[in-house]
Length: 314
Image 1 (tube, rainbow, N blue to C red):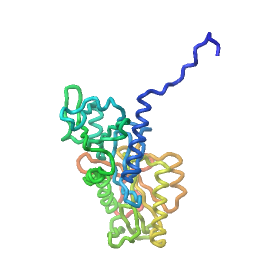
Image 2 (cartoon, one colour):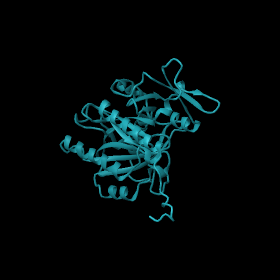
Image 3 (tube, one colour):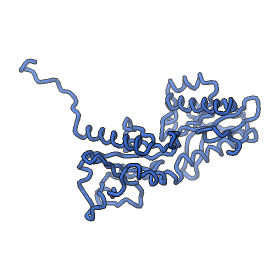
Image 4 (tube, rainbow, N blue to C red):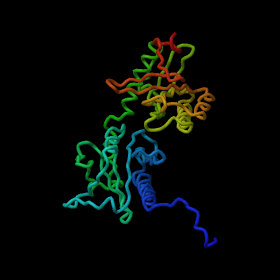
């Protein structure tokens, strides 16, 4: 290169970028290997949540119970130890605190010490937060190490009612309102032993009815992409095999806080169109006073149904 010209300007990886990646790798390893759970990177759209941790059974069957995590890596996050040595003070911005406390999932803050190869965590709850003049703080206890020993504590965080539980209950009411006396909800004792994942098993009487596994995608946790819908179809196929062909159809509800979040992409719509054993409905979640689900059409207009009708306005 001629000495007369400076090198072309190029992006530069910062030390913070490297530490962030290292922290993600550390937590991924602990969650996957020590806890035997599922780690999902969420940094593509980072609004203060870096990853979702999904609890799993010992045989790796997933549970749908989730914990949201914010991950910080590097010595700078351990620069304010408690005087008694019991932990470290983390200070944050109010906008992040509001987001975490209002999140539909329990949120944990994870501090990663790359030198000791150890991660510590704290559950971000209002009772543990101390408001300051410039923001807020929380103590990350030294005793709360993210490893196999944390399993029971983390499980307890997910046992409190989550948005998933609320949607599942509200969806049951929506099914009753939608199909009226044509609907029969199969009790758990009637569900096949190997029937997995889906929230409900229903029968709808009449020519346009059938037997359906019922499940939903919560757009606040996972967008309704073709990949997400394909995963639900794979579970439908599993249930059909497990029940000897007794459950052939899936009724899938996409639930979100606004129409945009539950709008399907072109490839997702194409997948739905070519999946004959799939019925998909979009529902708006409203918890202003009491939780309710409102079905909307392709133009984002609310639909009204007479109980038992297949089409709106009949």
